Length: 212
Image: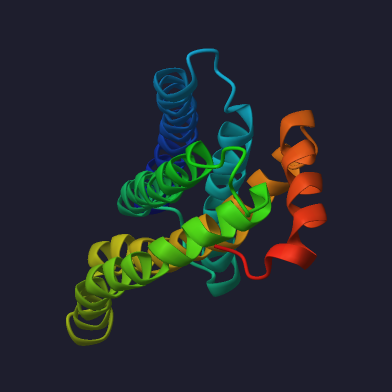
């Protein structure tokens, strides 16, 4: 009974810590993205980036926690550390993509033959190889820790933190490319300036040919 009570208290402590640090991490992520937008736009015009990045973070968190639930694993303090780490990883990967988006869209003047969506798509293609390579380099050692800790050593702590990292790093790479970027396009493509640019590009395209 004492052992069961102790484990119950540890589980409650882990859940409280998870909620507290998750809220703190999301608040910090929002502040960081707001600061980045302010530095880039001056008037915090990048609210679309904030919404897209936070949606990607929520996706990574729900997916990782959901897999924990499906496998029947308890959310331990080690798992909380892993979850917080992958949120930071996902945010970093998303910011890298958005930095390239800003670089491409800042070059879209009157002479540009790209629509806003095509500029974002170009940014994703330019950062795709880097994102995949970074994820592979990060996931391989984490996978080794997961295999050794869970199967060979039977260490629950190593399994908990490595499983969260393994799932989260893969989900973070996926979400920054296939969730954050398309959502950002969806939020901003109907802005008057971007609609005007898209209309101008489509009108000029039959005569000018390929996108550059």
